[in-house]
Each structure stands twice: as structure tokens, then as C-alpha cells.
Image (cartoon, rainbow, N blue to C red; front, side):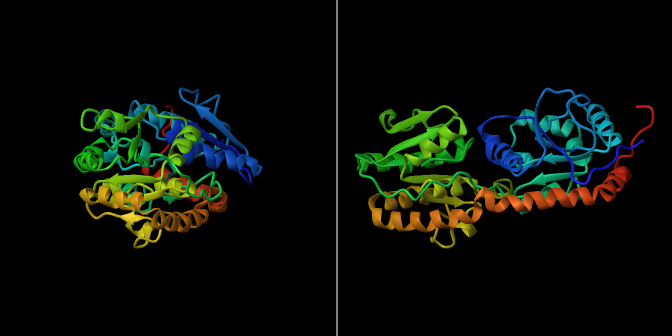
Length: 348
């Protein structure tokens, strides 16, 4: 007998990959929902899908990687029998994962995206890509939190340039020749990186400040210590499926942005909220321009900081809560649709 469906479901968030990379997409919004009175529980993997998931819950599983088709179907069917709705949270293009994960997803024929009631993501283009696997894909933009007060320029002996976008060693290496020329011609800047950059041995070590992956508050604090952030992304569909959260974080921390050649152009609005480079080779000269012209940089920072408030987490949260209420009303149609693709098997 199917469990009774409540007026408002409890939410069980299965965190498959905890860390600073999941803070914006998972931890912050669901913690905020708890503060608004929602019944949200976090479940870390590995976990017991019977004992740790509640009856009739909305199960939101962040980046699951099933061991086999049978294992995934068995777990999901058990939840469906108990009246649960199952959403998979998937926030990156399948081609951007490292080879081992891509091979694992192919080996199970992306069953985690196909055999669930729906997929939750953060970018409209990525939503279209994921609809190749599941017709029910829901988009929720990332919100930025916190947004400190506008930070006015402070005199510093040397400008600090943050080289952002985690796991972008290829793009960063392509910037190395232009950065090297800049370092040769000027005492500024100090280049600040987080995680593997691929720049070791390509730039003077005294000009390179490298940090291991940081907890999210520490990352934001380090970002705020810089004047300019370089956000390089290669052209192509996988990169276009990312979100502009790195620009929003920089704007919130009063850091000017140079970004491109993918994704960011419409967000920067022709130089109003940041400078856009149509080629990677053009990024470093634009960053140098901002470092050497503090008034231009501060005007850009002021506009971008004001714009970031439109994407504050608290402003976007009502859309998230409305979606989950709507999914509760659509529970039976979603289950019927999933049942046509993956019927619940008897005796399994």
C-alpha cells in the first residue's frame, strides 16, 4: 500500500559530494529553508536508504553515482513504494567530469538521470542537455550569500589578481604567456589561485600565491583580498552549461571581473558589470587595464555589487520553495510518467 502523501513533504537531501563546491548549490539553500520552517534533513553518503529516508519524503540526491542499474532501480523502487518523490540534483555537463566518472555514468547508461521523477539543475542550457535523459528537468538559479557591504578601495603595496574557476588548468595555462609578460613589465600583480592551477614552473614563484582547496568562507575571504578576478572558460557547450556564480561571488566581495570567452557575456552587459574577453589571450590585458585604472575599476565594482543583490539567495529562495510545493501537487502525474518508463517490478 502506498504511503499517504502529506500536504507538504519532508525533504531529505542526500549529499554525495560534500565540500566547498556543494555549499552554494546544496548546503546554503536548504539551510535557509530550514530557517523558514521547512522540514529538511541532510543525509551523507554512504547511507541506509531504508532507515535514513523518511516515508513520503521529497528525496533530493546530489550528484549520485550508482554502482549498477540494478542497485539504482532497487533503491528508487523502494522509495516509490513508500510514497517518495525522487529528484536528482545535477549541476554540470556530463562531459566535464573526469574520465573515470564519465565512464561510470556510461556503464550504467545514466540510470541516475533517467530513473527518477525529475532532475534539478541550475542553467537553462544544461536543462536542455539533461532532457535527453529525463523529460522532467527543473531549473533553479544559484543564489549568492552573503553579500557584504560595498568595499571601497584600500591602498595596497601590490595589486592582487584572483584566478578563478576551479579545475580549469588548461585555460589557466593558456594565460601564462600573457601573465609572464605582465610580470616582466610591472611590479604588479600578485596572482592568487585555489586548487591545482597548472601554472607552477610557468610563472615566477614569488608572484604566484597558491592555496589548497578552501572551506567556502575561507575562499570568499581570500577572494575579497583581491582587486580583480580572472574567470576563464573555454568556448563550447559544456562550459556554457555552467552558472555565473563565480562572477556573483566576486561582485558580492567588491572584486572586479574579467571573464570569457564563454558563458559570461550576457551577464556582464557590455562592460557594465565586468569586462568580457572574446578570446582567452585578451583577458590579461583587460585585467591589467583594471589594475592600472582604479577609478574605472571601482565604478565597475559599484555597479556589479549593486547588481549582485538581485541574485541574493534570500530573494531566489521563494522560487525554490514554490517549485517543491508544485512538485508535491504533481506527485501522482510524475509517478505515472516514471512508471511508464520504469515500472515498479514485482518481487524485486
